[in-house]
Image (cartoon, rainbow, N blue to C red; front, side, top):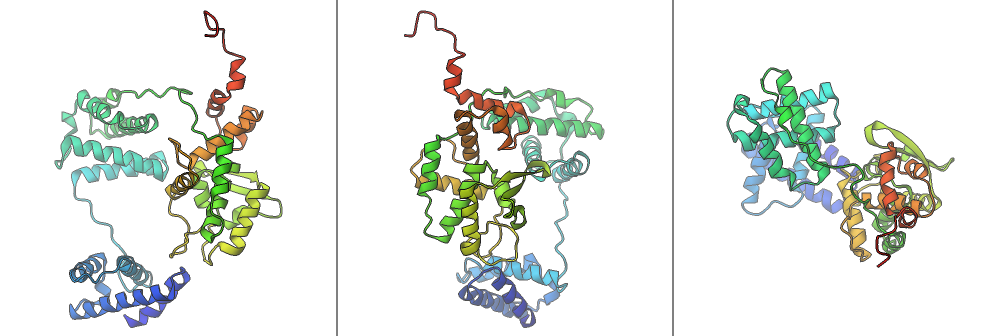
Length: 393
């Protein structure tokens, strides 16, 4: 496979790997190539199973380095792209439960048009339900009764937040209606799914005091390139109320430096333009000029270790916020990226902003979503409080 080594080395070099790392990767590929020849495995017959077999045998004398599996998978991907190796074929689903879930997934995607994230939640619920109810047997929906459905909800709802519990019962109703529409269920099991109470405006927003947010920003280490990147991300969250997913998907083309605006692409593919605050713009410009690694990707924020690509998902941003809170010595029950978004809305309200104005910045479509912040305006609520019988004891 020597003729493909140069292309592989050039590819990983573009992704920001060091010379030492590239040399170790070439050693792993060379070892794999020698083993392949010894086993008389043709290069066109390579697939993930062959790679796994090599790694298992190589691991017995403890000669597998940490990055070797990814190295060989990258090689396999490159060979597929060049047509040297056959394209990856997904495993054939021969399990009855898996086939039912796969059909339900196609229905949700093609006919309901659900987002990929919602799709994952629905599928996970149904896989768990079918596995608990039928174990490894083929599902017999004629045997299902109302207690089977309500029992599943009661067992798991207490372990979930109200929002996740509502998502669980919604997935169950959708599945049972789908199966009844297909003629696989005669009973209306969707009507047996209990309702999970989650009353509107029943909770308080998760927020931090404005002074605490400023302390988090001040404690962010700006002496390193990673620290300055993280500081720019925290400013986006705290000053503009940007969602974690919007930070992940932010592109270089979304920043208009001439007009001082930033385009955010949020839920449901909708986009909105916001003015770029001075400190946010300065932090972004400094990161892009001096700290962002060279990369072919158009993502604004990149990993600081190879491969130099954008973040994989929004959980990375939440982890970043969690570490920032810990570094600043802030103790909070809520440590995700959303806590800074709620903190911004709460701070604006306490500074005299109207609910309509507050809803525009975090781009909340429903007035009911913004109304929850009225609960934290204690000063305004004092004017509405009725006298307590017996005096102010």
